[in-house]
Length: 79
Image (tube, rainbow, N blue to C red; front, side, top):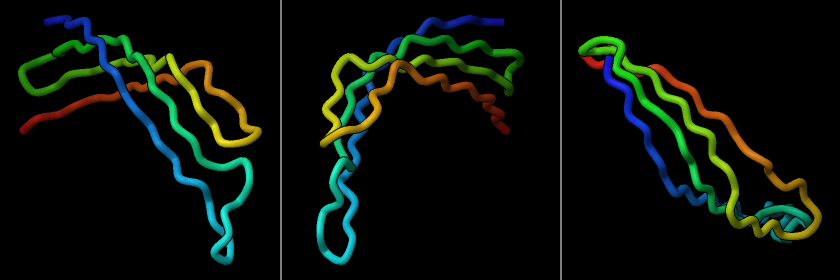
C-alpha cells in the first residue's frame, strides 16, 4: 500500500439565482479552499482518498451561512 499526502487549492463560484429575470437576494458568492488530504492505493487498480476542504476566503452575497469545512471521501477503480 502506498500512502500519499496531498494539498490542493479549490475555488467554488455560485452565481446569484434569478427569478423572472431578477436576481434573488442572498444567493451566489465564492469561496477559496485549502484542501489537505491523503490518497492510498489498496491494490494496483483500487484506491481511496480523503480530503477536507477548509475555507481561506469566503465572499457570500448577502446573508448566507459560511462553511467551516467539507469532507470528501471516495474510492477509485481503474480497469
